[in-house]
Image (cartoon, rainbow, N blue to C red):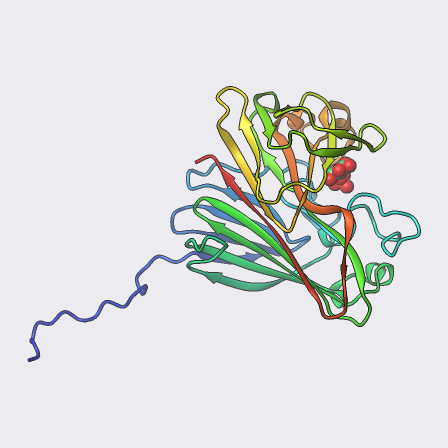
Length: 316
Ligand code: BG6
């Protein structure tokens, strides 16, 4: 029997607060109803800001970074592709600039998806960005004549930021590439953090003529210029930036398909020498923990896909 005062069905989700997204001045901003936010510039698909609900910024961005597309953005998460560092001579990438072209090309915003997303199916928002060969400048098209497609997904949840890159070979010849997410983490004081979970791994020290060493420290202290490429790490073990005083994690960086990790801090002289790094003392407020595949080359046959991602979790 029908009741006259039967409550009407509640539209599931209809009144649930949704993430907000805006695209203006070549910049996409997304915010969760709980207050977390992320900003991505189409130039380089560079994430330049990631704030927690309390407004606290998690990424370092140089005060003198160029945000007008005239230079790769100094800070946030520049995407390095298809070569890491200075390209080797006599290689398919040798006419490209340091760190390739992805961080200095204009990407397309492909759209967003929300609700139960990311590897751990959390409520959040996922922003997709695309770059392909015809979108490159003429100069880059000539320097790297491969038909590729990149889809870069930036997923914000309440307690994590995931960045994921899918590479597709859309052409008929295979190509080799390296890839790296050059994350500048925002920290209060470099002397008060340690980088953990690197002990006993092998690294190339770029400050010492690329000589190879084994990491002896269970908790790496950064007290000088540091530019190390840690090789072939266990992907199941996140890199942890921990507080020196109480050992608590400040950030953890988990990776899938990105088994090399670069730890970089320019320190005093190099920081002063970079016109787009400012203020000079800001080297104290950043540590780059860069998840990548940069020691060898990934080879992609015609029609094949490759995917790698990182998930950064801050101390909450
Ligand atoms: C790091 C490299 O990934 O990036 C360093 O290991 C380099 O050698 C640093 O100095 C910054 O590079 P760039 O091109 O942004 O000045």
